[in-house]
Length: 137
Ligand SMILES: [Zn+2]
Image (cartoon, rainbow, N blue to C red; front, top):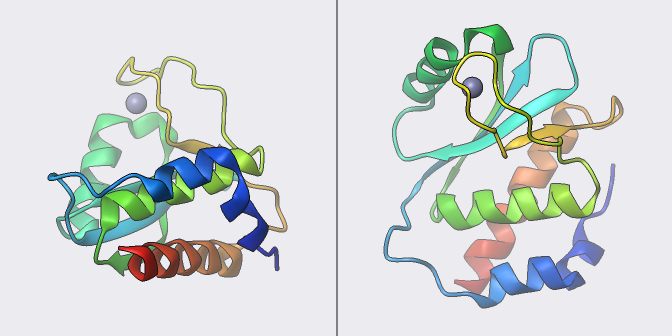
């Protein structure tokens, strides 16, 4: 199980945690969707029910073959999502964004997690980020 604490000292992460919440902040869910049976994941947030958002992703980009993996209810879903993205980037797990075959956009929220980074690790990461954000704000 990786420890995420040391990542809080990275400048990119400190910048996020030093910035105030935006007026558009909302409570909701931070979620992880897996691409089929691969180790690529999309990490996102939504204030609506996760299954609604999940269905949208499946309609918009069907080639990705999303399967729902994990989600967590958060008081500050946007800041928590931002922190999760920053932590994964610092661990070198961000995918190089390429144009999506379905929707044509460059998805910046896709991450390649190593095989040992399993569902429990994703849970730990989401809970860690949520706890840090809710402690600070
Ligand atoms: Zn797409």
